[in-house]
Image (cartoon, rainbow, N blue to C red; front, top):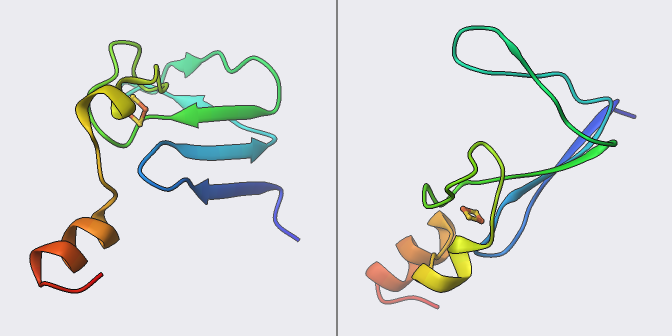
Length: 74
Ligand code: FES
């Protein structure tokens, strides 16, 4: 069993659980309170890398759904 679990939520953030070591683009540690983090994948959060709920306001659709709809499948 992996030490970290990453769950892709439907049209929302990556949910990361476990012993999380998170670093910014310069290698500086980013504090993660607890053992669970919600990481933005819509690009709209004002609190990156964390999700702030903006995905709901902007109607973000995860890649798999967006591709399916663009190709006419659902
Ligand atoms: S995934 Fe929630 S704000 Fe981007």
